[in-house]
Image (spheres, rainbow, N blue to C red):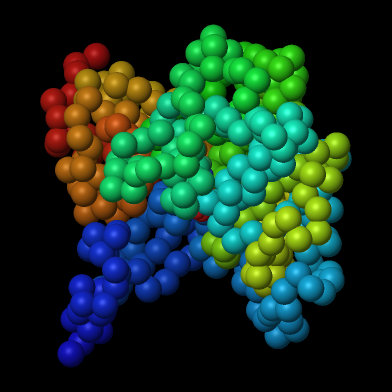
Length: 405
Ligand SMILES: Cc1ncc(COP(=O)(O)O)c(C=O)c1O
């Protein structure tokens, strides 16, 4: 059997079918490009679902992983290791005074946030009748574990797994009143993504984030920010909440932080960090030498290549061009997002358009509703952004009747 038949058979016979059947087999990547098993090159604006922040195989990331792999791969959190201390310090320098817990994924960062809310709820209201409620947002997404899933009020995620964990009431994004009405003595926290990724690229307004902060301060509840998708520079700020000039009580991170190497992290503000005591949480692999070395390389490169400024500068004209496509194609109802976290909302199911984009060499990711996500790496070349517009334009022109203006 040739390579293609072998891998197809392995996938169809032996791999759990929870992802359905991918149609493309990728074999290598460089920068914003990947290649399939036929040697076909694609412009990768899926970036491993907002993860390969530096593009594929950035030399700084490759070198850091190689060097660390030759030195020390894993020892567990029973011992100190240099890269974990360094990374914790680097994240505190981004988020503010506080402490960091390391895990391996976004869902695990959500679990740690939910556990923090329980510790806080007990601290606030006592063990007899602790505050256990975490208010979440419609269209939110916080992962596929039971905690993450229960905090994700989406039928397609929860279906088949009821009953969920209790006490995750749902407010409406950008409607502060809807959140305020849900707050009572049992409320421990509000958990929100500053830009919802999986849910369809819905952006929390600056005012809404500020109002949430005030509400949490007034009612003594935690503001938990899920920056798993929107963080690590994707919007042109290191954290997407920064536009609102507020400080959350805790932040969940993953995806871009490792540039493709699995890592998750939770930063907790100084006066809440001590709620976790020795033994109250843990992870065998969390923050292991290899993962931390990869994340340190990502953070160093964001600074040394001035990527935050770059994202802001290059995304502005690109988003402008996307908005022009919206003006000329009725099928596009909205362009949402910031920086390189962009959603194109269509008036109908965009699956055929996504397939045509793929055929023309542009990889995108679906999101909630009729949204296609465009997630270039922070290092993307301007010419590749322009190429994405050309591909989109040609696919839209042949798929729909352009408006004449
Ligand atoms: C905002 C947000 N939180 C949590 C998660 C879960 O992350 P993971 O798939 O790494 O568990 C995701 C994944 O898409 C996400 O976008």
